[in-house]
Image 1: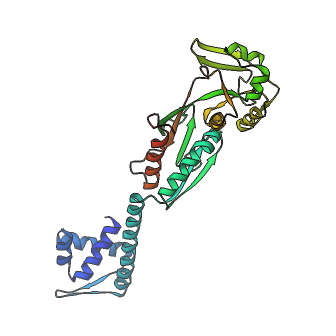
Image 2 (image 1 turned 90 degrees about the horizontal axis):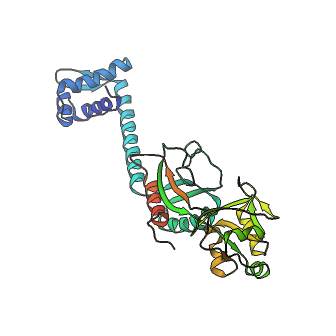
Image 3 (image 1 turned 180 degrees about the horizontal axis):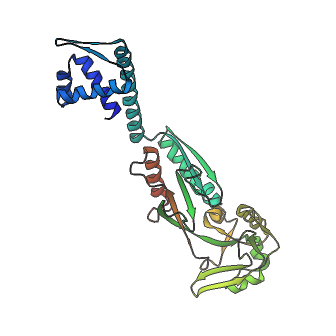
Length: 299
């Protein structure tokens, strides 16, 4: 028999004064109420109640067990109440992982808005571009660009990740502005050293897809470093739109070949399936989808 149910029945028997009264409260037969108490006594190897035809009295073991049972069941009720409260009100720590450029440029400002709306939630955000097992490393949410990998996760589509080309006005004034993709081969192009095909840019535009051979004198493994190089007139950069958007808006960079870009890359919000997610997780999922899903309004 269930141990907690038997403990609860024992408390009812003690507090109601009889098996029949306890059984009536619980909606079971007096025989079943007696069986619960006998099960405890058999497990403990000790009598809990002295029974006579007129009354029952707790033994010394019974008195101690009664007090401990009340404490245990009170703790269980408190645990249930705490869990229900956690389900109802967003609170606690959320661990989130995101790619570096998207995370720093788009996710962090959004999280600031979320935290102002939910003062009982804290966020531990990891920003890096490596592929990892989010569940094994203890992350509740992850934003992933490209292949999802683990199909056991729930994957909610976000706006596709776009890249574009840009250069400083001074560089373009000095070297000319390309009007066709093949003209990029005559320019200094700033490349990521960890790209597999860093000497070719694969572009999609009005005339279909083109693979353009590019060259340059500066490569690095950090996209923001390439952005800074472009701002200092070092060449044409191909980087995520989220990384270059502010510089384009300010005029410090100018988009090159705006009708041409690499194919947009799928981006997803990932989390483990859970029939009853906590309020903090549920609220964060809803918030991020409202900001970044394909149907969301772009800021």
